[in-house]
Image (cartoon, rainbow, N blue to C red; front, side, top):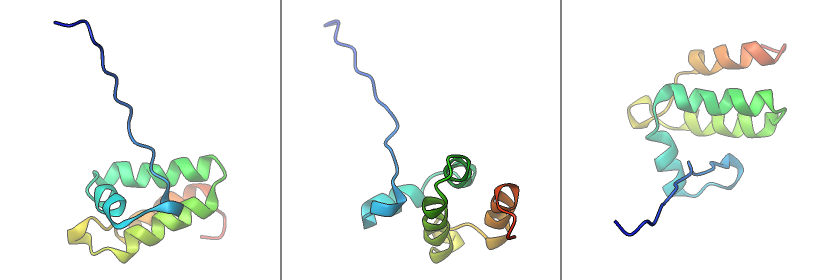
Length: 83
């Protein structure tokens, strides 16, 4: 062993600046993680990012990594009073 140590961090997903490759990567993540991205954005007060993630997930067919409206609304209901 050469003693070289590599550390890999999870890539940061910025829904406001996504390209098709990043969207494909994001849609390939497990559903619970995609919903967690929305939840984290709402917890941090980044409502615009949460809505952009929602748009990405609703634009995609469920078979291609999209998420149902009901599941997304359940996340939003925890943080926003408008639902």
